[in-house]
Image (cartoon, rainbow, N blue to C red; front, side, top):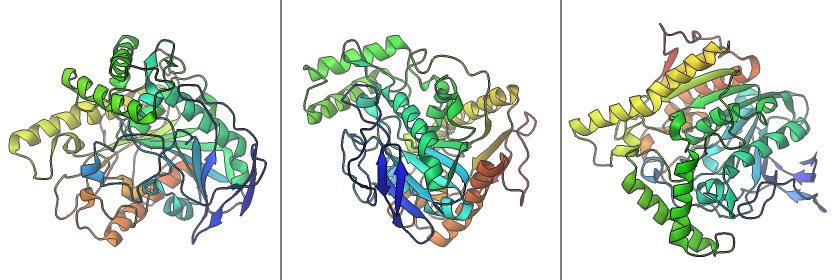
Length: 424
């Protein structure tokens, strides 16, 4: 299947329920430079295979999620989107996925985020985005990197969607951005950027950490200077392996002085373009979190003592539950329609509870891509998929209409009814 884009023609492939286009370039950039438009293709671009991800260390939550399967190839030239669509004709809502990973790992091209089920069941076009992570995406260092490059990448990807998605059967005037953890946090940042306001129309925020995960410029400068000292050569030309080694060393040094176990060493910077203001208007949104977010950061596979569980609950409340309600209040105050949820599902051989990331296999991905995930325990895929179909139905309905699926009650958020629905 061949589709025309602003950069040239791309070839995808047909799957059982959808058409798949992997690793379509949306931009390009040299290390520590802002993304630029893609050079036109001279030949048809082959988008039939999985894409690469930006260079990164292993995820610190691998013990929760398992390793990505297959192990992805890494490349500094991973400015790509993956598009899954039920049909190349017609016009339907678009859902753009921003992955999590603590601004340090992950990639939209990972099979974890396969959009086939959501696309085919919900009649939506699903686009997943790669953006620069870690030191490559968020270093703030005078003369080297101006910071917030990962945010610029996200905006460039959304601009590509606006300009090209109609050719994939999508409606550029009906775009829902959805993301989890750092991806959801990214959406809140995009709402504070004038550059991104016209680029999406609804949002779904899954497990958004506190907004103050953003660094002040002073703190970002300190982390950048620490990285430069540990690298001890020009970051723009240093071998990638040494850049990643210095990134890991910076993370260790940062963790020793930071009391926040969720905070990564490199993240978006507040009051620095394009994250420049507090949002005054908001789209309609779904906002939610998982019941046991904190276990992902504080619990090992041996389980947890009672005092450790108390600490986990406090982390869940402070870093995820309270911020979700604060966002719901802020969005409601702008006149937006807001729907809230809590994800309570746990596997029968529960180790981590309804942990951070636990809802991901219910929205995106396949049985094969999630088969090694410890957070799912020994639960069988049909039971996971049953709840997944319910969640995907709500997500897709929201993309179509601005409201969850009407087959079950999910009232709008009010302070008197803070959780609109639970998934268990």
